[in-house]
Amino acid sequence: MKADSVPLARAASWQDLLELGKPRISLMVAITTAVGLLVAYSRTELTVTPWLVLATLTGTLLLSAGSSALNMWLERDLDARMARTRERPLPTGRVTPELALAVGVAAGVIGTLVLVVWVNALTALLGVFTMLAYVLVYTPLKTRTAWSTVVGAISGATPPLMGFTALQGTLELEAWPLFLILYFWQLPHVFAIAWLHREDYGNAGFRTVAYRDTDGRRTATATVATALLFCFAAWSPVPFGLAGAGYAAAAWGLSLSFFACVCWFAVRRDRRSARVTMLASVILLPLLLAALVLDVL
Image (cartoon, rainbow, N blue to C red):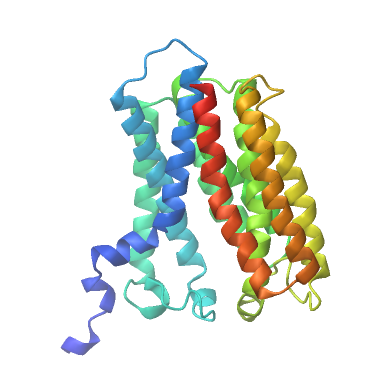
């Protein structure tokens, strides 16, 4: 065999393999899982050991990375059509489909085993559900309907529930505000991104809310409606008895500031306002979660 015929993926670097796991998304998954753990800790007198925290975050990270790798494996041909994704490891040939599939499956299996053995079965079950929903439901729906975002947000909102059940062992009522915050935060965030990259997504065949939305009215309406729902979700820890007045003030201030950005986007419907909305959502979430953690601990 000639040297230049050896698949590039045989020399795949650790950076290429790391990229398969979408590290920024996985980092957010780890942070939101940790928030769930901290909230559960504030509601119980149970001891939290460093080993439990490490096992929970490791298992969750592996499941997230595995989901992302399998998503890239399924969408490798579509990623090659988009400017924002054509430099990923699979479209460029730095990683073969076979290797990506193996990495994704291995990460999912190992992550599940870590949670089953060192955390608990409920947390592992939530992790498997999240992975299967992301890979087998959300990913195929992306080329069929704009409703895929509504479905996919379920997977993105589950990690804090996993953090909560890792300590509590059950899904208590107090855990669900965390789910609501993550769920409704994702929708306007993704809609702004969809508007920014609508031509790119269209070239790949993704049916986002911005697909064929030439004047942006449909995208703007969806973004405003879901941002408004997020405002109420951000406040939900208060009536659920999870947080107090300090968090309530921070939640309303942050969420209403974000809603103002969304309304500006709805009026302008241009790249600048969409980018500001997207960046505002990225800044908003860690500030809101930090305010919640400081209030409950």
